[in-house]
Image (cartoon, rainbow, N blue to C red; front, side):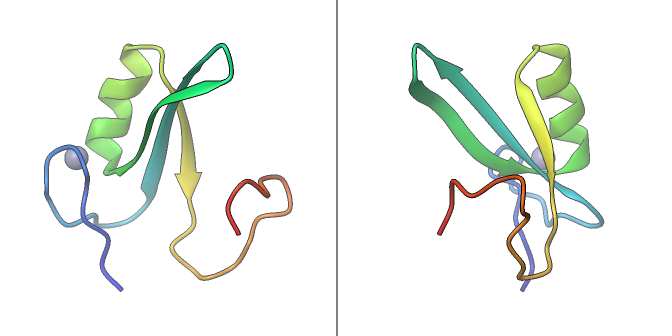
Length: 65
Ligand SMILES: [Zn+2]
């Protein structure tokens, strides 16, 4: 399954990143982006984390079923 960057609409090659922004417990932003957009997000001080494309559930994040 190919992932498409939700920010620049390019096919994500390599690592995909999840960018989230939360304020007062409300999710303002939650999107899957490519590494380039993730770098931009980091510069904007948004929270980014690597998404493993393989269908497994990381032990540390159980927010998604
Ligand atoms: Zn992108």
